[in-house]
Amino acid sequence: MTDSWVNAAERIGADLHLELSGPGGRRAALTRALREAVRSGRLAPGTRLPPYRSLAADLGVARNTVADAYAELVAEGWLTARQGSGTRVADRAEPLRSTARVPKKAPARARGPRHELRQGTPDASAFPRAAWLASYRRALQQAPNEVFGPGDPAGRRELREALTEYLARARGVRTEPDRIVICSGFAHALRLLFQQSGPGGVPVLRGPLAVEAYGLGFHRDLLTAAGVRTVPLPLDEDGARVDRLGRERGVLLTPAHQFPTGGPLHPARRAAVVDWARARGGVVLEDDYDGEFRYDRKPVGAVQGLDPERVIYIGSVSKSLSPALRLGWMVLPERYVDGVLAAKGEREAWASVLDQLSLADFVAGGSYDRHVRRMRQRYRSRRDRLVAALAEQAPHIEVTGVAAGLHAVLRLPPGTEPSVVKAAAWQGIALDGLAGFRHPSAEAAGTATDGLVVGYATPSEHAYGAALEALCGVLPPP
Image (cartoon, rainbow, N blue to C red; front, side, top):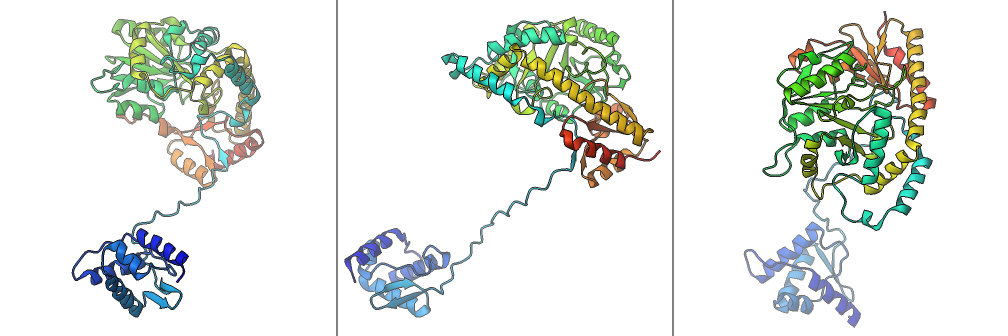
C-alpha cells in the first residue's frame, strides 16, 4: 500500500460524512451508514474506501469496528476487497433511484400560427434600426455624467421637452415639460393612477370609472384588481355615448380611433365629455394609442387640447415604433403631477434612461416624424389590400373602422363569430373575435354584434398576401 494511496483514502474518509446512529452497537451503525451511502449513490461503484485505521480515526471508533463492518458488506456484495487494491464499492451495487419528483421536460414550443392577423402590434421588421442606432449613439456620447446616477421620477427632461413640442404640433396637446411623466406604457400609467402606493397610500384617482363598451379586457382587469368598478358606455357610429355618463368620477376613452370598433368620437361628444368633467369635477383619461395613423384626412387632434386641466392624455411608442421599447407618457393636469410622482417612487423601475435620451434625439431630430409618415403609407397600403381582397372574395362582409389605426373590424352574420374564429384557428390564422373585447356587464352585452378584429400591421410584406387569402377562405358564405 503506497503512501499516495493512503493519503487519497484518508481524504475520502474525511469526506464520507457518515452519521453513526440508530439501534445496535457502533459496528451496526457504521454498516448501516455505509450501506445507505452506497444505496443512495453518494458512494459510486468503483469508489475506493479509506483503510481501516484512517476511517476509524476519522469516526472515533476502534479499528476492528471498521474491519468488521467492511467484512460484512463484502459478504453482502456491497463492497469488494482485493489484495493491493483496497476496499471498493462493488460495480454491481445499484444506487437507489431518487423518489423526488423530477420536473418534466418542457414540451417543445409549439409552432406559431401560419398567419398572424392579431391586432395590437406594428410590423416588427420595419423598426428603424439604423436611425435609432444613430440616435442612441448621439445620446450616449452627449449624455452628462449625472445620467448614470439616480434619475428623476418624472423622466429625463430632454424627452419631456421633445414631447412637449411634438405633441403640440402633431396631436394638438397643450402642456409643458413639468406636466409630463414618463412611464412604461398605458398599463403602467393606469397602475400609477389607480393603485395604492405603499402601505397607507392613497390612489391618485378613484372609481367608479366609465369605459367604452368595447375595449381591452387587460385594462379592465387591471382596474378591477385596483378595486375600481367600471361602467360601460354604449357605442354607436359617433363613438361612445357620453350622454349616458352619470355619477362616475372619470371616463376612459379612445377618442381618436375607438378601440376596437373604429371611428373617432364625434366633435359634439368631445365637447360634451369635457363639459361633463367640468360640471362633475371629474377627469377624462384619453388613450391616444394610434392617433398618428389616420388615412382619410389629417389626424384628429387630442381631446386634451380642449381642457388640459380636465384631461389626462396618455400615449406611447408601442404602435408607432415598438412595444419592446416600453416607453410611454402621461400629460397631466397640474393637480395630479405630485400624486403620480409619489406613486412612481424614488426608486421605481423606470424606463431606461438611455432609451429615453435616444427617443428624445429621435423625436427632436425629425426621425420620428419620418418613420411615422413612412409607416402610415405602408399601413394604408395594407389596409387597401385587405379591403380590395374582401371586396373581390367576400363582398357580403362589411368592413368598418378602416379610416385609421392598424386593424379593421369585419362584421359577421349573427351567431357566426365563434365558428369563424374556430375555423381560423384550424387554418393557422391568429386573429381575435369581437366578443373578446366586450365589457362583461349585461348593459354592454345588449350592444353585442358578431365580428372579427383583423390586424394588418404585423405580417411581413411577403407573407401578407397569403394571410389575406387564408382569411377570405374561412369567412362565412353569403
